[in-house]
Length: 273
Image (cartoon, helix red, strand yellow):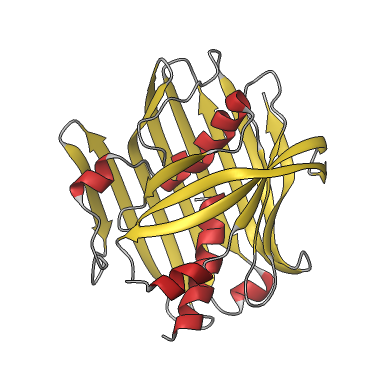
């Protein structure tokens, strides 16, 4: 695979990762003191015209625990190249302002059109002794360099990252922070920085939005990248709704440049209670 093809895959894959399947290390997050629930559905597209698929996200918090689930299914043009169905679940505990995932599961089925379906399941569990990973089938390699035990220990799963972003921004109202994620194989960082303010209309939301610039930085567990390849990884944009009484700042949109146009997720249905 040449460098441009690799970067295209990275851009498309991690646009979705940053949106829907996004772990915070055990960091201070002021979760709502009362129970809260978020339910959202997103439409994926290229140039906001060509359909790529649908993403759903749900999350719940209580004073001592949280849970989240997500699903991704390709459609339209994307299904011509790779038919994908993905579902993920994460659970964790809250101790005051601290959050830590305890378990994460992923089921991923994919196939080329007309080809035989392949699948992989991943289960991650965190304990005092560290993070254990069970994958079926196992990966043929664990990347260059592979993710270390220490890197796993300071990360949370990608879904917790996404869910945690909405909670963190709901409290701080500021796009800032470097979030460390581990998906069972790859370890990477998502860095948020201010991107201004906007107005979002659609999907049941009509109002002001916080715009965050999103930087994806692969660290371990993947392909070795040169400095030139890393420089080609584009910045993305994530839009979050202004938080309401629940303390959530729901994700409204994520947009990442790709060689064939901007890949975008837009919320099509949103409910926070």
